Image (cartoon, rainbow, N blue to C red; front, side):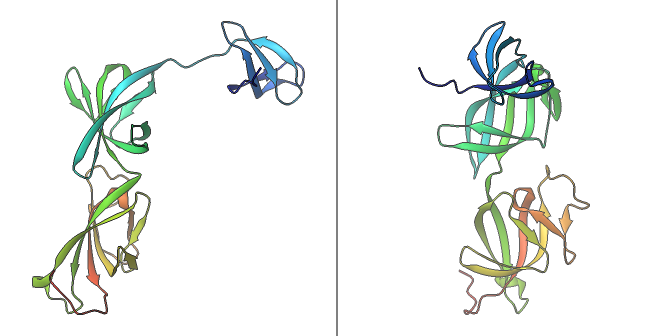
Amino acid sequence: MSEPTERVAVPCPACSPEADTVHEILRDGGQATVRCTACGHVHKTTIERERTLDKEVIISQDGESFSSSVSVPADEQLAVGEEFLAETDEAIMTARITSLETETGRQEEAPAEAVKTIWSRAVGNVSVNVTLHPKSGTRDDTRSLKLQVPGDYEFTVNNVDELGGEEFTVEGLYLRDDAEGYSHEKLDHPGDSAVAKDIQRVYARDESTTAWSAW
């Protein structure tokens, strides 16, 4: 017989009657049979399980969208800006809520039971738009590129970054509409920083030693 894999934290009447300890579930049901992993005592207990709801989720990434589903606590209040894990056919992804669709339309906040579809975007790994201008400061020869970075990668104004074969000094950060916790929509003071998942575009000065090319 294989060892049970599901575990639960409940008090143990033998060694920890006042505090939860980890137990293995031997037999599930209304009165579950569990075994304390600390002392081995076997006893019955009621396991409180949170009621969950399966909700459709639409995840956008690099201009494409795909659907999945996610389980959320039935009594949870959902809001734009919150992040969650979604399991898709491709991978387990971190996503951020961008809108909540209910019977009455799109909302920024709503109870889970009222939500029909969760609209979101992937933030575990993101594409960041970068506008580069040459060291000379000539704005006519600026070029745009797109960099793939982890969502938590931090860009800081006045810092030099080396990414995707490019070397540049960050001069400004233009933030996304759903970015929270920042004082301004655009950050351009030395030391100002933001993580990639919150950034709409990075403005930077090219630090490449090669000759400048508009291509």
